[in-house]
Structures are given as structure tokens and as C-alpha cells.
Length: 72
Ligand SMILES: [Zn+2]
Image (cartoon, rainbow, N blue to C red; front, side, top):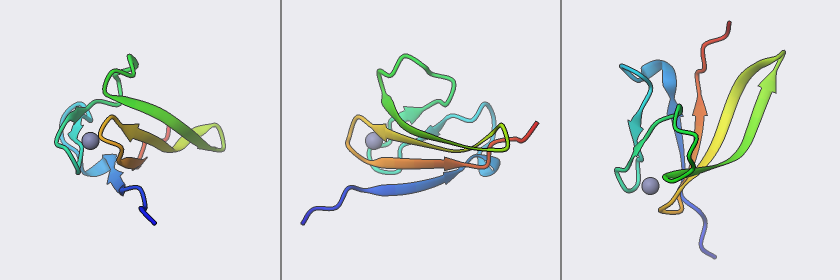
């Protein structure tokens, strides 16, 4: 069976505006990009009103779990 590629990206370790390259294909992924041209949002997880985890899928097929959102 072929398993999807799953990566975890911690936003607290990313400098700048939060954009990062896809660990698989290198495409730049920006969490502020809502056009879904580069990636698709699969799932959002909230804990006490604040975003805890965002699961996105890059166009290359890899699944990326974004964690480390600033709690406000
Ligand atoms: Zn990719």
C-alpha cells in the first residue's frame, strides 16, 4: 500500500511571514495564501477558540500538518 507523504511543520521555527517550502517538492507555501492554487486545506483543528493545527495538502500530494500558531 502506498501511504501519503506526511510532514509536520512548526510555524514557531519559521522566520519571516510564515511561508515555507514544501518538504517534498519545494514549492513555497504561505499560510496567508487563500487562493488554494498551491495547496488545499483539508482540516482545521481548534482548541479553545484558537487554531491549534492546520492540515493542508500540497499539489504534489504530500500532507502537511502545521502547528505552532500564535495563541492570542
Ligand atoms: Zn509539495
